[in-house]
Image (cartoon, rainbow, N blue to C red; front, side, top):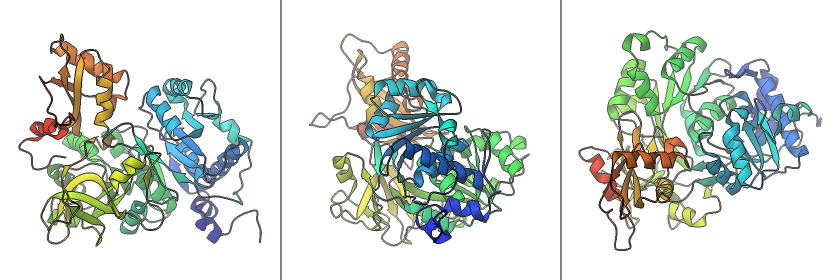
Length: 524
């Protein structure tokens, strides 16, 4: 057998689908972006070069590589280069502060860091705080102490690897307590990819997908990059969301597919009517959305404008829940779909299944193919997520199944806040507030926001000797911004004489949160 290149069957078996596309349609556009374009052949060659560069630097299968990079072709190259090297990719949110990036670098045990020069300040701050990573490559410019990504790749051969090893991805997700944790799988594979892939029609070589969100997030990485490129559908990368720019790109490139979050729907609907309707978006066949609950009135308005092309899913970095077509949703407004039998279980506080129409804690079926997740280096958190049998896990959401088996979300049992489709740890913000000398105790909650779904609000109990004021509230917001990415920080601070507590002394976060949601049907 010729070992200079893998056969088609071999390539597909070890996750080198990109290599197959590069042979069968080398000049087809794979990536279109303001930072440059890539054909499938060029993308594949660069992935091979990066894989060899990292091996030459001493990395081996199982090692971790962190990536801090905007939506540019090098991110996609890194994804595929690591996928065929047996390496573990951790994309890092580039909005984070150096302190927050440093935590993830250390926690994920990164041996290499690929960083966009655009974020040199925060990345440089991060690497000063940790011992590693020992391999550091800068993308799109220079970063002090980093080698050049382009130069490292240019030194290597372009041909397909003859000994590829399938890599994995470990993204960091928010939860209820402490710092973010990596969602780790021993084997690569997310059921959501297959579930959406089999429900959404793609025409290889003809369709084009618009990636509206940052690739460090699970949904854009999966639905706006992995699935389209795996099916030989090119991707147009947006570098930062703008409602009118999205419409312009759809018209210019004749985009057929895209993924959005409800905040994006709100922004587009807020454009002046003549401006919005002045763009030709008739090529759109699929607008997929998830990541955050969508208000019924917003989704109805987007369907009235775009037509029956809006599909929704209920899932997370941890796993898959349900999927709903526009026709099904119009018949049952508010549903997130009809899960497969046994995929979603609704349970009471004792873990027992509840009757149809009864709100309970939602549990999702864990995959039985070896791709079940664990929270990296946190068996306690992992144990809390899974049921006693280990067959189902919960994201902390509350909901119910109707008599026909359609799922509706009702509330969030867990404390996490979802603002614009991005998860925020309230406990992480609380801990920063508690370092301010005026704060005796703090409780951050998500409150209603028509555009973002939820926004972060801090409720603070002051120490003796401090008085509530607008000036102090503003000072506390700025205190948070000095230590945390701005999207995590409270937009405002309310003061309370005392915060409600259990007998154990633990703050009752839901009791703090409930008044802000009074009079609403759903509390998410």
